[in-house]
Image (tube, rainbow, N blue to C red):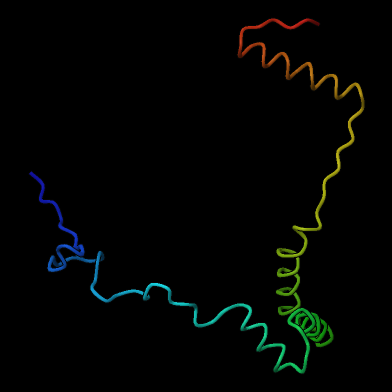
Length: 121
């Protein structure tokens, strides 16, 4: 017979355990984030003499390149590639009429095998 571990709840807060309910713990309901992204960006703008964050990133990247700081330059490249290139990458596929017809027939054949319906060729 295994002994079940009791977990503290609001109804039974006296149970000794790791985790679970703790009276007064956590953030109060309706509490707002002390630091917001908008607030951070506003502070950067105000303290950078009206330059927005993107401008500062570009300046820092160019400064790292001018200083031949390969490690920092590589970090900026990784940042740019991971964040910016996803929205720029496009794949364009142009199929010929024969390729489209072959794909349609292959799909119809596969569907026929699944459903047991024969296809006309």
